[in-house]
Each structure stands twice: as structure tokens, then as C-alpha cells.
Length: 166
Image (cartoon, rainbow, N blue to C red; front, side, top):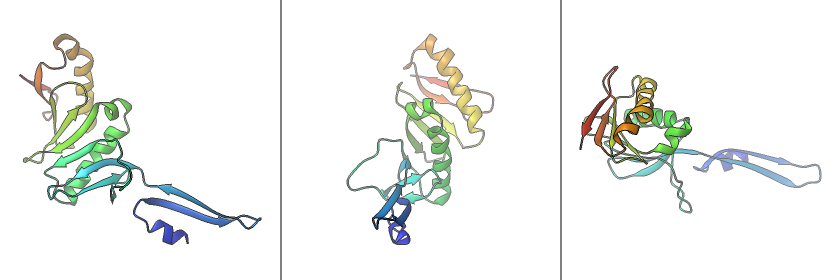
């Protein structure tokens, strides 16, 4: 019975047992979505924390980050999963980043909730250092310039943060 329940695409695990009084108990753990992906073919699905895809629910839409753009193959999905997992595990970035976009050059662009700019992450390498640079910019630079002075914040270069003015 557990195996049949776990066959459902939205179920992570199930435990079925009979109590001494004869009652049947079923404990179900649903899959927890990390990011909603819309690939280049227009198909939408969720990725869980392990990077495994599962279908959208017909009854409920999760409020979480969306990944879209030039997502074609499993390599792109792995990149999306890695970046989304990093963002998900940090409360500030989880609240701030609402969209992950893979552009035509296979570079990662992030769309923040606050501010009218694009964050160009580049590739997934040295992601922690890139987010540390961005946090430092948010803490020090934004106070002096404001949220909407720049159209792009580019983090793809090592030891640099390049901003493009509007």
C-alpha cells in the first residue's frame, strides 16, 4: 500500500500501519517545491530540494521563485536547481529573489522583489562569493544611490561588481 501511495507524483513518502485497535493509519509526506520551472518548450513543473521534477498541482499554486528562459536540457535544470537551492536556504535571498532567468548566453539573471534592476550572476561558479558581493552592495551602496539608479548589477566578474546606470 505504501508503494502505491508513493507512486503519486506529489508524494515524497508514505507510511501505512495498523494500530492495535485495528485502525489503519496513513502518514503522507508531500514533496516540497523549491522552484517552479518553465522551460523553453513552455512546459511548467516544480523542482524539489533534491532537484527532482514533479508536476504542478491542479488545486493549488505555490508562492515561490520562478525559473524560466533558455532552459532546455538536464544540465540547465541542474544549474537552476543549484542556484535555487542556495537562494532557498538563505532567508534574505529567499524573500528578495522572485525570478531566475537563463538568458540566451546561458547566463543566470536574477530578478529581485525590491528594486528595478536585473542581477547578472553569470554562471553558477563561486556563487557564495557573488551573493556576498551583492549583499555588501545592498548594505553599503544602495543607501547612497537608491534602489532604482541602476538597470543591471553584474556579478559575473571575479572580485568586481559592475553596475549599469539607467
